[in-house]
Length: 218
Ligand code: DX5
Ligand code: ZN
Image (cartoon, rainbow, N blue to C red; front, side, top):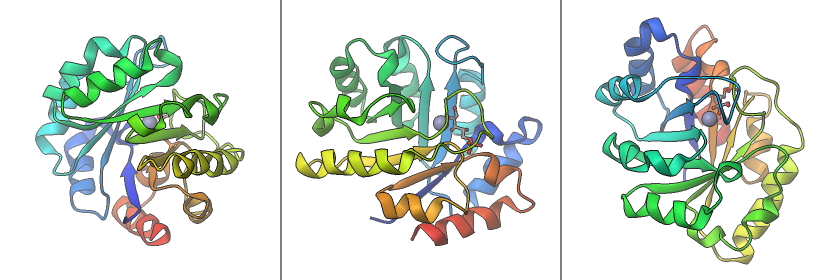
């Protein structure tokens, strides 16, 4: 499979959201990465349904929705209605992860599970075949623009082993601190999808930056 680039809207200019969404539309990016934060699971609040609705009306690429919220089950149907392609919940926020994954898939979405930097990959051993995507957090979730945590490389390799030994087709996404400096090594370690927020939107030419990441990744 082609390695995918998913720019994170969190680092876009919200005063020019339409312009920044169109940049993603017209670029080599594959997905829109959408960070939803509730101020409880993480110490920050991002945006909610009305903003996502606007993004949806402009976006011409699949929406990769990353929920950093408690009780994500309460919102599964709403995110399905908003045309989410992937709906990712945090393992740390789910008491009944298996049930949550089934509910996401029953609504016609791909099911993603995100792991905080401290959460071992071994937690997914019994359930990996049910999961379409694992999002490995390479920063502590809550904010864009943080430094990449180097232990992520080993986590990717461990996760890849779990996927292969279970003959699963789960994709590995890496989220946080991704730049042109670590993209190649992340792909080499086994990543399939790279999320990049500030590296894309704080650059002079986001479209070119996406192009360069896509080139490094493939
Ligand atoms: C962090 C979010 C990330 C964030 C990445 O909690 O999940 O998706 O937007 O931003 P950068 O690439 O700036 O680390
Ligand atoms: Zn994210």
